[in-house]
Image 1 (cartoon, helix red, strand yellow):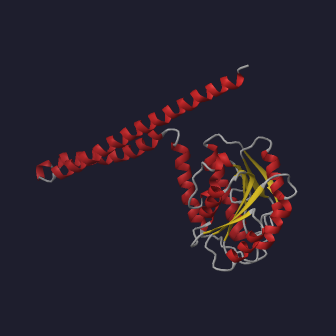
Image 2 (cartoon, rainbow, N blue to C red):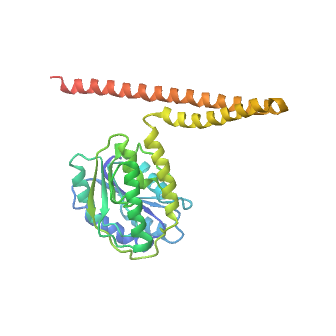
Image 3 (cartoon, rainbow, N blue to C red):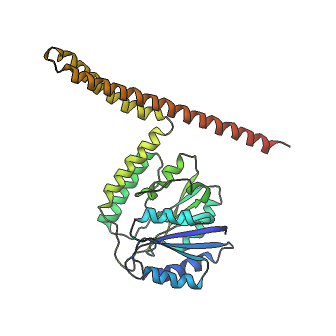
Length: 312
């Protein structure tokens, strides 16, 4: 069943937050003249989060509860909600009452100006300075510098997406914070607006300094994708170059070791490495051809579509 708006909320041990969050979402979104659904995604909670969510779902058909058998993390939970969502526009938010559902209309209003993604910016963030605010500021500047997408608050879960955009972006590990950077590959229009942020009312945060390592690893992955996706041959050429240098070094060593009888081993290793380098370069050329052929087809069909639209 298609609806206009889907609101996706990952939950993990938020039994005290579920009911207040649900009522707050309904109160905020009911003011909008739109069909909507709410998806609570339980990420393997060990408390009564599922039971509380199911009680609410039994009374409201607009609420669906997706249950994981164990804890997988926020990004997989968010990805599951995105996969199951039926809305034309998808809004994601945290389940700990720190994001404010009253900001959802502002996100949708900004999206109505022609944007594909609208990102929330917690400009008055109510979190601990040392373990949350400072690492977040450093990470956001680093992410903006490396990806070229200067978002002030990549970690804010309160975002609105066109379903046609977000459903085509693969999510894993901690990748949800890099969605704007990934979407930029497809030329998506991205905006950022100020949103409210509240102090946590119940439970303890599961985030901390240990998350920095995962974010840095994902950032390296994103940088690699952004750098090489439009020119696959560069990545293969870099790897092939390193392997070729090793092979040539082994070949030279083998020539000098021929007299001692061990040179053939070095030469065999050299030939193996050099063959691998050639194979990698061949894969790079094939990848480049596939990419360029795909781009040519996209441009061709875009011109056809443009001509059809402009025809009297």
